[in-house]
Length: 97
Length: 393
Ligand code: SF4
Ligand code: SF4
Image 1 (spheres, chains in turn purple, blue):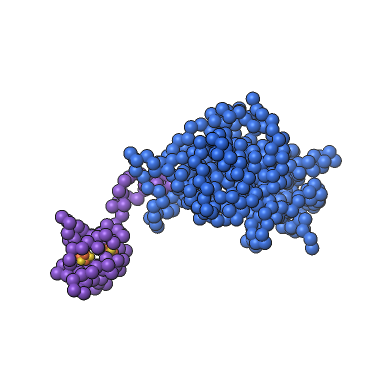
Image 2: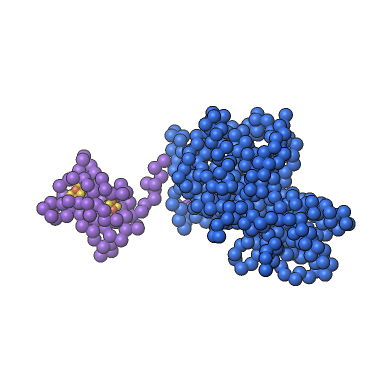
């Protein structure tokens, strides 16, 4: 994408395009990646509710994975995930491993 | 028809704000500015203005409230002094960086510590680089006139920057002077209907304020801000021309007093300029070609125009009612020296720090300085470039 010059930027850095945060992919900030362990998932959707971004995919009322374009790897979902019988359905793994 | 009144500086500013009748004000009291908002809240309580008045729990919140209301799309004003503005520090940059045309009266007061409630310019000078427009006022009349003009300047579609109107604490804010009020209708027409730019409350066109701007764009926004600053002078002069039509009073970027043929000159801000003019008259009577320059638009500083106005003098003393503890000179001196930098054969300069914490500036001080300038003009030599005056050894 060609970056704008100073003459073309919006006064006061006001964003006039609704939902343009979608274009700002923050996934590259991630140092740890949440991994979904489906067999331990009880579909409580805590992960979806707690995620400070909108990085948990939910389809037909069910958690189906993560949107790694936006997931920053904060680990909140993994912390909150109750899992099944003490086994977490989300584990954090170091990126690049 | 103008109405002649005898009022304090604060009363005059409060009256200007009443006539402008802004949409929102968020404020917190602090001496010596308290009186402005106290009077204004009475106008609100009595139904004389339609302003939504927010009594905040601190100046930090007051300016935050102003920012929110301005971004929402309202005409917004507030007032403060000294520590109050110091507490707004973070918000001052957010207001200007977000290009929100908030108008604020700054009743100049010394900064703590040591704690002091009286007038000096350390608060305004501390905020000189925060991207706001600053208009400085010698007396109640100028404070009133500048307040009205500030709305028009700040809200101009080419500018959209916050503006502060500075007046000296107590010396002006609390002394009664004879001055003139302009008719309500004339003020109303002069400031015009407020035009919002990208208002948050326009739900048909959703916008976001305050995004994160990193290495890829921050410099472009700063450059754009710097560029807007360079357009302010023209808008100030245009507003002054229009203002003259309703008031009969002339304003420029700065005022010159007997400066045209002057050989020695004083540069001084706000109320002390009045005393200085008197002393300059007495020097003129003695045949000494003395003059004065009083900056009005201090931010952005009209370097070129001021440099040209001073370049032909032999010796100039810049009087600062604030010190900049940077190991060099007072803040006004630094700007005056910079404005004369392109002029190789400009005047010899010296810098006196006076009147800190509200210490009186007396005719004797101006005489002392002018006599020293007479010597410097003859010899071309300065004993001490920077010196405190009116201080005990
Ligand atoms: S790691 Fe954080 S950002 Fe990523 S999905 Fe979990 S809660 Fe959301
Ligand atoms: S919090 Fe854990 S158990 Fe609940 S839906 Fe998310 S992954 Fe499944």
